[in-house]
Length: 188
Picture (spheres, helix red, strand yellow):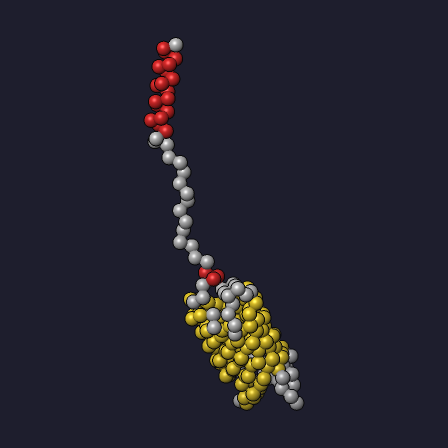
């Protein structure tokens, strides 16, 4: 009995000594992760697809499809400034322009912003203005009105644009051309 009591006391003492050395797992440390989708200022970019048709009265009709990429700086949700490049393809163009030139390449400055605040909203109207030149065409100007669907930095764009272009109809003749464009895009 004395041996059993001595063994029990020894085991109990050893357990109490070793139990002080055992550490429970700590809570994982959190990283400095930021949810950039909610950031108001900083770098922004967008990719867009446009489908358009000329609205020239008493002249032949001209359609185009284009894709563009814009990158720039976002000062706040009401003002973003960027630079963009794109590719535009004219189809149904045999009677209107030099049929050898179907592809053009816009290079432009882009200013855009929300019309109302996007806080607590997932759908807001926005405005935009593109101003630049088109390789193989000339000067262009394009104001836009649209709707943003999503968050500050993760949103789909649906828009309608007017575009004024200086087109090269014949090799040495420039013509003013007005387009109406429907667009869809993604801004991040």
